Image 1 (cartoon, rainbow, N blue to C red):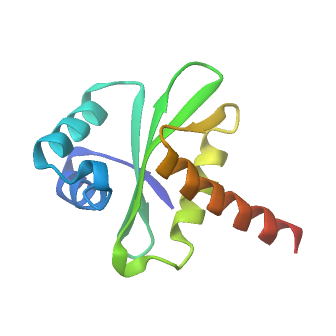
Image 2 (tube, rainbow, N blue to C red; image 1 turned 90 degrees about the vertical axis):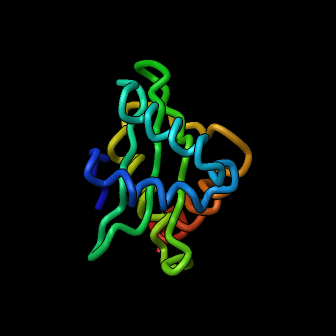
Amino acid sequence: MLIRYKKTFEKIAMGLLSFMPEEKDVKKLQQTIKEYESNENWHLYLWKEEDLLGAVGIRIENEEKAVIQHISVNPSHRHQGIGKKMIDAVRTQYENRYIVCADDRTESFVKKCEDVIQRDQSI
């Protein structure tokens, strides 16, 4: 399930986001976390099953549009459908907004997830 980021999850969130190539630099990663903590239009969620396994960051552009900026799954838990579950939960959470992706990498991942979600729903 998606849970909203809070400061007590900072180290875990930073660890999950650090799996993204553009967030490898510690200073960049710290800036990203600070933005999620201070900007009311940036929302970071963590995916929890038994443990915290993934992170997805959303930036609210306006009343109609939300942008997926970050999405990451712990490498030990990849290929288990966690990314797909996170995207589905984000779509449910922001059902009144058009969801777009911040960059090509994120868009490619989300597209794969949507294809699987649509395939699962048609079965």
